[in-house]
Amino acid sequence: MKTTPSHNNRRAFLKSLAFGIGASSMMATQGKLNLIQSAMAQSSDYAGLSDHKSLVCIFLAGGNDAFNMLVPYQQNAYNQYKTTRNKIALSRDSLLPLAGSDYAFHPSMAQLQGLYNSKKLAVSANIGSLIEPTTRANYQNKSSQLPADLFSHSHQQEFLQACSTAKSSIHPPGWGGRMMDMLAAANDRPRDPALFSFAGNSVWQRGLNPLDFALNPYTGVEEIKAFAKDDWPRWKTSRTDAWHKILKINNPSLIQQHMTKSYLSAEERVGLLVGKMTEAPEITTVYPEGNDLASALKMTAKMISIRESLGMKRQIFFLKFGGWDQHANQVNDHRVQLKVLNDAMASFYKTTEELGVANSVTTFTASEFGRSYSANDDGTDHGWATHNLVMGGAVKGGEIHGSMPELILDGKNDARDNGRFIPQYGIDQYGATLAQWMGMSVSDVDEIFPNLKNFDTKNLGFMT
Image (cartoon, rainbow, N blue to C red; front, top):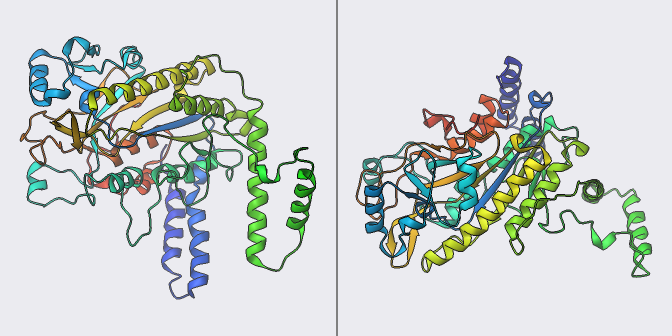
């Protein structure tokens, strides 16, 4: 989508207005800032979007070992891999070769291998936390800007989700939330929730406007039970009626007025979603039992299936799948985790085909970092660069996008001589590629991803 002059002028005006209110009192200033943020958050440029697109993020919390997810298959390269990884190396005979590639998937990923070979899934390689392009020399002589506290779970999870870190305990907005801030104008009801989380609150979904909504992976949307009009217990209906009478009282307190308005708005939105969920078509795709990620993805599919009745052109979903911090017993634990991921993603893609939305739904994985290439006995330590999976009908599938790191300890890509490989591509570039597929303008993408200006490549090319 091209940026229009009016779009640039509007943003320039709002930003200049923001800088011109510094002389006001603190309360007045805060109020004006809130209005300005709200005005800047939604971009009317997207009101004319007529197609539907949904973005689904699967966050692999803990640091996925992508170097055992995607393994060198060419014989000489495999031999070097086996020597270096020692106890955690996979046997070559067990690997699942990728068509047209010198690499193979982990043996637990048979269905994802099939999606890759049928060009419905791609790998975005060598991704990580970067502020600017960084080399081994830059890292070792400390001449590059680097994210705070590399190799720390909490700090790198925040950087992954916001492309920056907190300053003075003020957390920056996440890039998922900021995308929805701007894209909400495409929906018929732009103030209704359009970013749905199966992981409670996260940095990634936090925008300037509260457009996120927490879902249950098994039951989806639930009514506010404390005041639901149930016949049982016998006193429930009368309590609910009393509560609504209290809400109707005209109270002079601004705080109570705001509380009342917020509650009624939440009740209306929940009621709308509960009602629409009853209209969702039955999904016939079989999902694996006992797989929480699969359950969350099935509920995601149900939400996507009612997009038209909700008047939604753009939706975003956030799912969290933990357990990837494998310092020991990695071979067994990683096998189990990847099998869960494989089964869940494959069922979800099949469902998007069943619903006829495969080309308009893109699912991607993300993890705060990869693992060290050197083994820590039967596990690995925190690393840096990782590989991500991107799935959907609009993905340039059957390809590994980006240059792979040189898998050599103490090599040109190794930051600390133990296989903490320096990423070639930043999270900003990864997210910006997805944002552009969602139809976002160049100027809005630059605003959401603060480090993108430091990289020559703004789009990693894995989307059509």
